Amino acid sequence: MQLNFGICKVSIAPLRKVASDRSEQVSQLLFGECVEIIEIKGRSWIFVRSLFDGYEAWMDPKQLHLIDEATAEKLRYSDHIALEMVDSIRSQKQAMPILMGSSLPTFDGLSLRLPFGKFEYSGLSIDLTKPFNPIDILQNVAKKYLHAPYLWGGRSPFGIDCSGYVQVVYKAIGINLPRDTSEQVNVGELVNFVPESKTGDLAFFHNQDGRIHHVGIIIEQGRVIHASGKVRLDPLDQYGIYNLEKQKYTHRLRVIKRLDLGVTEDE
Image (cartoon, rainbow, N blue to C red; front, top):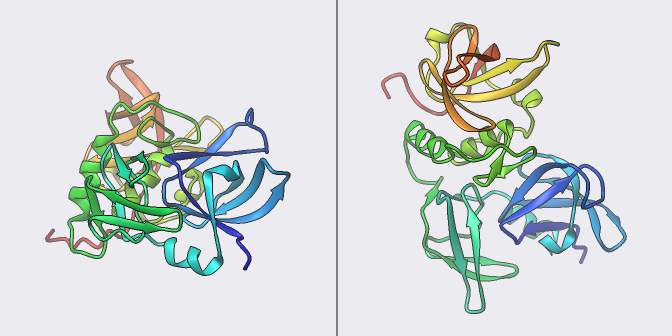
């Protein structure tokens, strides 16, 4: 049996640009997310493709539990997502912290049966198979990250970048977005004007070269929540993000996109 896949068995696993601990972190795996192993380099590094978003990078194989393809297919789609900032999963032998946005495959409301052990989890989570209000969940989860520090490649409350932030917030309502801003901007329908925007719309911003380089979530009309230095809530108008502390515009608005959240106009 070929074990060409893996599931993240630690709280956070760095994904790196090249096979070195000194290399730039380009993304992270959260607990419970699965990957396909593309290449093996010695005993210390593997090149993987995330089954959640297709992102490819190098990582330490010790942070994975190896599984076969059939098991990966069963575990890659998790109906439960952890919504606690940080809580623990516990077995008879150990307790381990997991973070908001982690996948909880096989979770039955009390325990998880994973290839590397059986664990109990009593923290807050969402069951994506049951009815929920996506706008309420999106707003609550987005605001839980407020003041989380900016970290290039980060996807956790203890360090997160702008596109990673958008990705994990939408993960909490069952929407899988690409990892990078340059790909996220291709998703959804165009919103023509800021006054037409709604909670849950994505606002994209460009630099002096015209390249899309930043993204945030419109949390209500005229305000955007985004990761810039830290996760922060700022005014938004047709020009862009206005930073009240700096008393100036810091990001120039390029486009607003709307995703299908399954919400009707009446809601």
